[in-house]
Image (tube, rainbow, N blue to C red):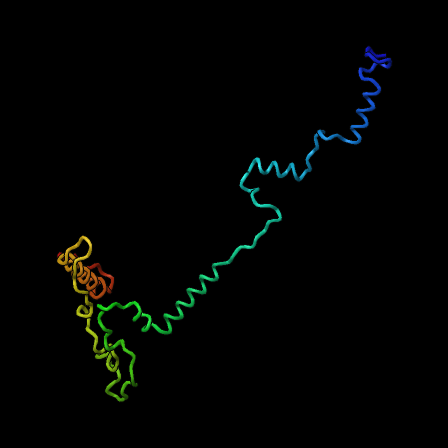
Length: 187
């Protein structure tokens, strides 16, 4: 026998024990509930990586594919440039731009036929518009110098002359074209 207050030795009365059994079977409002395995997993994930759990597991929204729109726009632009380059250049030409050279205009008729128009080794451009173009260093033309930003007109002219000299030395000098280094000259 136990040393409790009840005749059978328990410290609880029979009525209290019956009430405990009824409440445990029926449940009470304030009784703690065990979370499901999924709820425990989500809670653990949110504790370790809070940003990952921002999107719900059934809240999928398809992404917009804007890359194809960009590719299509670029392809359209290239097609316009390829089909009508002259009209496109007219849009960007300002009122101060010089007129196009005669060689760049669209020909109105076919070139004259005959033996005199065929190129030779001495005249490789005979019969083509390139025959009238300037040759070698005279073919590199620079714009007229004018003051720009912090540079005076004289400084711009000097920079253009040095740029022209560099182009001649780097692209037209026969030694450089064979692989030699250009001469270091002071200008």
